Length: 372
Image (tube, rainbow, N blue to C red; front, side):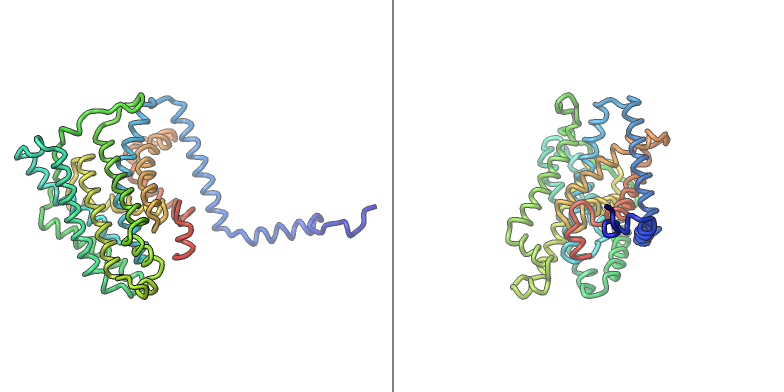
């Protein structure tokens, strides 16, 4: 026999209406719009991918070429992104002048590279030439990064967080026009390295040797940085300062030295990225060359999780592949003309979507909860 005790109030029409009202009260219009927007993006991506794959417009070899090109470009973004994420992990600030640190090393080294090409030293000693370029570019970028920290950021270390951010933007413009005055406004290019010509067979695909060299060398630098941060005494000091500067100082750690070391490492990686970019894409070396790679590297750092070293590495590689493959894979499938010319817009759209749907990034959840 059914009694009132067996009737759940929530099962009654009135209880259902109350539960529905409470559910609607918890969901804001902003959440609803964002969720619908997210669903629309996913549907559009599925339609674009389906149309591109089923149309047979590109062969598997062409897709593989795009992927390897994206990985090579992404490794360059990753090296620059590591500078952003290291500084943020220590000082909780975004160094928007870091793109110009990258520019300084690449722009200075292009003159050395062309001198080597004119004198024949590049032709007779190609690998030694590349190593010298890397050392010079890393030294210049390291010097600029350390000067930035000492002159622009250290006096503002205890200031509100907006003040160093504005200072970084001002330092970015100052560096751009300083190097414009030093080296001129014309475009320059790295010489072609004959030793990096040719293709390498990977399975059934042929990949340009220069892409593999850039990707392999960048990965070696990233692995070396990870080992340095995780296994060395200096790396442990960096992690301690990142956790709590005051406690680290009480434990006898020289906080200023750790911060300078952080800027120096980020600068050296950015300088190396400048040479790799010159090998991969020789043209387009000028005083404004750091702006877009800097923004894309920041996007990569946010994608991976700002403050996370592995996140910056993975985020850079992912962004490179997304920028290389997705315009052809998605936009062409949606019927958008000249899709490959929209790769920059696609990359920056990724930044907006990340900030909307997952602002902590792929690996940055713990950091976001602790330091946001």
